[in-house]
Length: 251
Image (cartoon, rainbow, N blue to C red):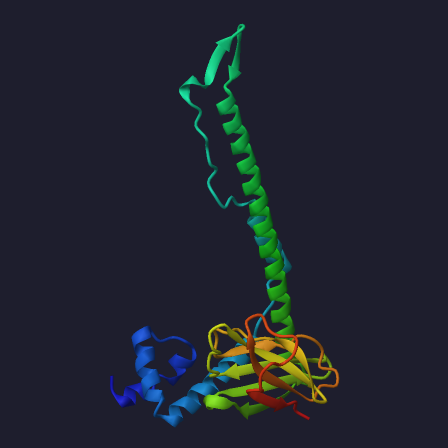
């Protein structure tokens, strides 16, 4: 693959459409090619925003059908406990089950009950997660598509770029990152509202993604911008490191 060929892969790289070998070759090339890095940043940011702005909420009827199927479809084949051939004995003209076989049956019944409870819990968790994801996606798209949405883009460390989008009518904000380096192992990027110098947690970024759009947790209120710090996995109650980025909200 020639250098000229590598220059044409910026779009495929931004959309994660390269295989492992092609991605490695392009990344080695991009390390010494500023024009390719710049084009990747711009394409990734555009793709993230366009895709999210066009997001649609599934029809309520489709969601209800999926939720019913989650609760009704068996996740595991039923387990059976074979009874030993001599588990039945005759005594006093009647048949009675041996103690061992009775215990096995009770254990099997308990196991079936436990499996049913586990499946119900997993189904409920899936429903809750689906509802939360659907709600946050709809809110994120609404902020990006709001008539009064205002955005500001700034260069971040390591050649990354960040865009903050604010809707005053919705009192919400979205942060779109492109090309951010992954945080150290066991760490995560945490977002903060800047309330006149007091930092208020606004949520966490996915540590496995370098390009992401995040709906900030909480209302904008009087915040003037956002900050980004590196925190332990799970986040912190307050910033524990110097900010890796500070972005003012658009006027």
